[in-house]
Length: 404
Image (cartoon, rainbow, N blue to C red; front, side, top):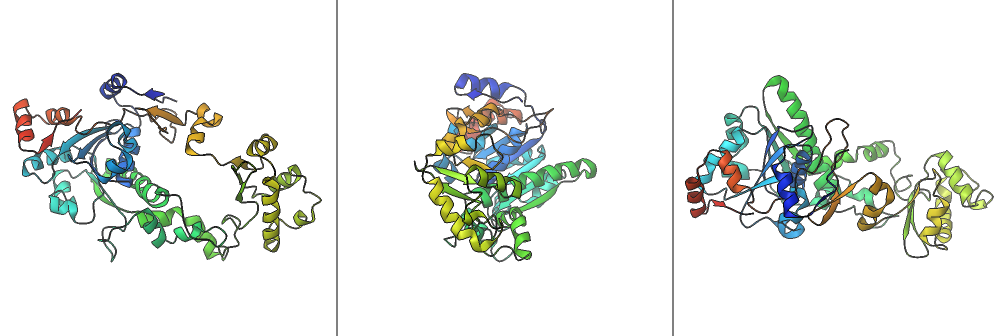
């Protein structure tokens, strides 16, 4: 598989910026209106797959650039080209429309109605480019009573009924930050919708609007849990809701944690045997007898607390008992399996996940390090046919900012 092992300096950045994009989406042109969270993540996924993503940024940056860092540190902007413009300046409207007219995909993550007020709503853009795939990323969708309201990942997961499933043993509901609503239910599903629409456009010659709502995406990710609930099996005594002793995390003597998940009977049997519990009365009954689960969980907590993590890793090292250490993000980058798979790369001094999934013939790759604000403003404007004098005029009007 072709992955960039390291993009740490300006020389390498310039080389990767100049090379021809590779991947299954090479040749696809995307215009992304800068935002926060799922929209940038969607654009990153498309860029990793080879799409040419022109990022329309404003001079002051966004909340995302303040939160996650801008420039080379902005992981979600890797592989993109930054055009820094003032969307409210009338002088740039023809330029933006020219970009859109030549694009295959548009990504925006504003609240409903904002793009229309800016003059770049779906009707206007599709009239200029009937083949355009217009991707809209919001928390609640383009309509409905919550459409105009603000929100964040945990809010969307909460209304989707998904946050509640994160309870541990009756505790407070929670879920990993940004993963359920923003990234999985948001950016990833928007990218999936764009891929589907691009395939359909090959046959129809027509574009369409994608209304991607993080709340609905979060619910879709939880389809299996809704399935269990419909069967009456999601009531705090489910095998995968942390109620079961064989699907939980346990603290070791050194404060590190183990994830223990031998759900299947054959894995559970060897798990019990490896711990020397075959003749233990607490583990002699049926695996799925929920009445015994609290006592079994207490016993396992006591057992795992007696030895450090390394002891348990060694004990289960050659087994299929589904027992693995809980790694921090830093530890994950150093794990032998992840290193063997080159699952992480260093880009501009930031360790981050490599592109995924892996395609055998047209693999994804990080096309370039994240751009500096406005780094490609001049390049993108020249590609639109503007002369140096015209570019300087836009700069003097405050409509365009040159960077890099």
